[in-house]
Amino acid sequence: MSSSGVPEAGRPVVFRNGIVLTMDDSHTVLPKGDVLVIDGKIAEVGKSLTVPDGTFEIDADNGIIMPGMIDTHRHMWQSAMRGYGADWTLTQYFVWYYLEHGMKFRPEDVAAGNAVSALDAVESGVTTSVDWSHGLRTPDHGEAAYEALANSPGRFILAYGNLAGAPWEWSQEAPAFEFARDLGVNITTHAGVWGATNDDGIRLMYENKAMQPGYVYVHAATLNDESYQMIAATGGTVSLATESEQTCGQGYPPAHALRKHGIQASLSMDTSVWQSADMFAAMRATIGADRSWEHMHAHAKGDTVTHATLRVEEVVDWATRGGAKALGKWDQVGSLEKGKLADVVLIKNDDSPTMTPIINPYGHVVYQAGRGDVHTVMVGGELVKQNGKLVAGDLAGVRSQLESTVGYLQSELGDETWKAGMNPEIPETEILTNPYQYTRD
Ligand SMILES: [Zn+2]
Image (cartoon, rainbow, N blue to C red; front, side, top):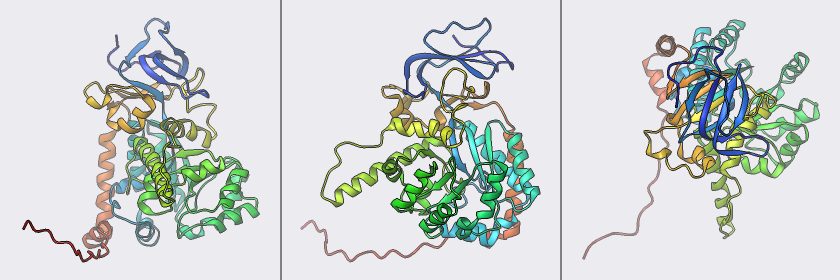
């Protein structure tokens, strides 16, 4: 049984007969369970629930019901340039954004990027995103970024930042940190980024008592044990942006170091100028990088890894609970538990051979499913995606905003600069002389 159409506001909704990954403290999994939503909150999670008359039913059979995913670091404004920097290095990114063209973005361009990124997030099952908005060079830019998020479906935290300071000055932003502390707002900062910010940055922050519980350190990939200890001791968490760290070279994705120091991890996509914009990619990249690290180090010692340390279950934890904890929102989101806000994702695709059989649901989420398998997304009890289609927001309107932004940037840069920016030079690869020759006689 399932209902059709979009349920009117206020109508209770029940997800029926799915595999429920509650992500509660004991990671309870219901092999065939229901999730009942009333007044924007989770009213009940269990088997064959009795529901109020007129409850809208969503058939979750052959699917996985899980909490909405949480991205702790996404430069949403940059989605206006989606894919442009797919072949960039971090150096090319710094030059393009900080030194050459970042200042050309107008408030409406920041808004266009934010608007598309917001839809991109919820459509893939990310119900909360931290907008790491570091292109806000005037208050008008800030207003535009905020308005775009406020008018988009989903939950967003605007992390205000600007392009006034170059990345290598991040660690010396003590006055900004103090100002934020006085306002009672949290801080998220890039840290441990090869060639930009290193152990000195962490040490200076620590010595100046600028590190506080709840701070989110992004990447934290090029740090020594002492720096991780300072993060752990001050109650900080780390946002792993693995696709980014692997692609741009901030340092090796540090899940292994977080494990060693007992630091809470969350996951993030960083920027769609390069990378994909969904947590399936983030989960897969993160576990792949960690396993790669273990094998590489074992092989260097002549050993073989017989048991992988990082498990699919933990990676799903980071994509949900980890994000909620990093953002201080664990009492509201990050799990499917009675009383929490109803941010719910159903992964189900009866047309896809990849979605059957579902034997290991955590493994299925991490390695088998993709964003195209996200069937239903609910934020605070409201359906924003249904039957695999966005039903909230104005994608057509956002598309036309983007056309005008991309057109403007293209004409500001001029054809040649635009093309050169997208196609950086390739270093020469020397092909070794090969002593072998293959002949058949
Ligand atoms: Zn970043």
